Length: 382
Ligand code: COA
Image (cartoon, rainbow, N blue to C red; front, side):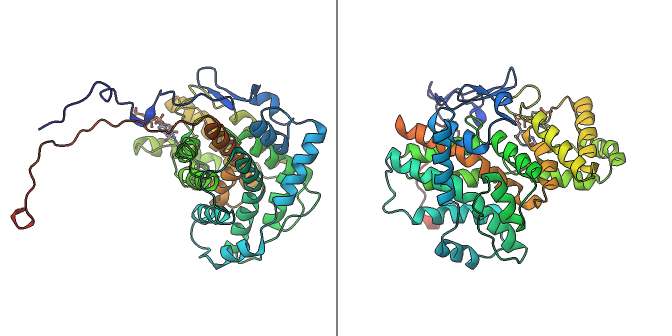
């Protein structure tokens, strides 16, 4: 017997495709024109010109900071960047060979334990927690990376920028200006992206009046999936599998024949090329040139052309992010966690926006199961 369908529930939008579920002043993902806007600024205006410190401030407070505001914001980030010894001890007690995103999700939840009664944060409490999360999540990621390699975690160095500190805490040495600028640009480009799955999750959590760290923890769990944040790592695996520029064509043919997906290609919203991709491509090339190793860039560029020709698919943010991060010496298993570092600013802005004009997020589902079944006693069931 089929279920009756109410009018309201009859029009199912699978994957909520095309559904406008929130009004926001934070960012605009314009799929038709392939543009990305942060608080009114086209990403092309910001890439390579504004630092992650400036952009995280922009996302959280709505305007680019003045010199004095930036100095104060940088001071606040510096003050929260180090991991407290008790938090580091918890991280050290966890099984390090567990995936980095599972460790990061767990440790973000641990950050929430540090707060006094966290249910029903005020907006000011959320802002305080956002500063802390933006500052310390990269420290956790760097410590995870080092522990997985059997090394002792390195704490931040005063005087380094946010991005330079991440590279310093990962490798133990101060990066070149070019390396720090490359990671900084990556962080800027990945800081915000509208109502993507992880941001929607964060807004849904805080929409129940749950606390800031519950929302960020849930967002990290959502970002972890290969159709969202983990595509960058999979894109790098694909480049490894291809191995040389000569192998691009056979790889494309094989993948098409097997009906498999090209990681770092395609997008739910953008109808053409992801507006972040050209910036990441330029930076990946610069890093390849600086390290006299253009192999990964060359494979990527050929693959981009071949897949677009064969399937009409455009690259997305994850494609050149893969070789960019790899050229910076970052292990592919940490790529999704690096994405989380960047996106913490965007998640935080959305959490605060949702909380400041909240309505419980509660869509409907169309019931498609049986109806009017009669209870069967246990012994009578077949
Ligand atoms: N490789 C091969 N084919 C792809 C593809 C890819 N990367 N992305 C989309 N397609 C094809 C699908 O096979 C499908 O073809 P079909 O209609 O013949 O079956 C069609 O394009 C539509 O795909 P669909 O998955 O329905 O689109 P979507 O809007 O749900 O997908 C993504 C968006 C991002 C999930 C999808 O493009 C994808 O899986 N990309 C690879 C993972 C990735 O890079 N994710 C990062 C996103 S920023």
